[in-house]
Figure (cartoon, rainbow, N blue to C red):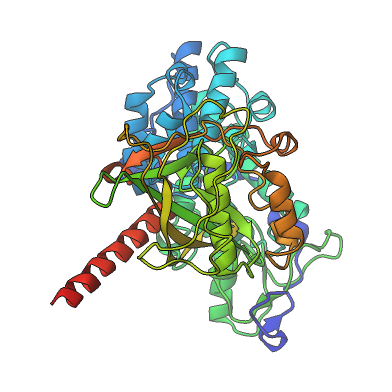
Length: 546
């Protein structure tokens, strides 16, 4: 039952046979579809669209498979117009899969910057390396092997790549084709159930079965769903499949004869009575009264994004008040969310009850983990973020660990101030992030050097906020676990190192280079908010001088 309609506005779906959701004679539909596609396929200027050539040898087919693969990954959750310039730059930099495999995550992320969903770039890189190492630099030439043996390639992508590059008769079912076939078949059933997906995959398979141009058929289905059979305001008058579309026929019969119950066959023929001998459909669920084509497919219940709070520390170092300004970036692990991107040091998924004083403790802890010779901590003497004066008592710095013995202590390095910079909201597909930002200003250091403080090259940040989702307060268990993670030297203990490989890398970046680094959209928002904080501070000081 549709969640956003009260029961009074729902009518039981008209009784109809399961055969309504089958395409028994796909030939006429396929011919009409390809005639339409031949007229429109070049209109959007997609550089990855090329006609299949039966004269291609194995190497040329494999090259086409690589090109299609890149385009398909880029097009996930991203509009065509956005992808085109990224695709062109990518193919210029990585013209072959071997070129991609020889690259690294920083270079790949640099080209991907701004496209979002960065895990896609990391998967492309890791899978390219596997193809070069295990498959002689060629993607498998059939969908089954491609899906089973290449990480990150699922049934849809394997079908698209193999039908387009290898002319294999395999179907595709992305969001566009799902919507299109749900309407053609008048299928109003739970969209994520296996039975529903089986019906839709069978419909997609019918289109490519016995097709001479399976790649073009699949691209035509995707194009039709994207440009004509849209989520809102579908252009039914321009659709080449209109006469076979059961949802359209139902809409038309409702308009001509309200109150008349019709079921519609997959060939477009209206049926007033359903023969008893046919198996009835038990998949379809009630549909809103008076609804038309846009009622299909049945809407899925949206899963509420989980909410998380991160404490982000924009750590700046200057030799003195007028010295060059440097900012500390940490590279994320090469797997998972935002893989391989750089970010400001962050305590992830902290309890929402984390207090201002706890935020200062987090900043101290991060400094003790990231710097070879950290400054004296402020949290033991301060209950709230400091003001711009930076005057606060300091405790002794941590005793050097075996890793740092022999390294001169950064004499005079101190935390001048820790200033709240507000919250930044950022949505991922499944997470609603609140970045609580604080600006941490360091000054001083060794008199003999104008370079920023030495960094631990591979810090392990896994224990900065251990078990945070289950903890209600910063104090107590959380504080004890945090203490357990840090030895007296300020470095993580050997037990904490086993929970996560030391894959982050640290780097000081000049002020003007921060926004050019491999940082995601959320980090760009944070950076601009901190810069706005500085601008507001400058205005305030100017006002006081006047």
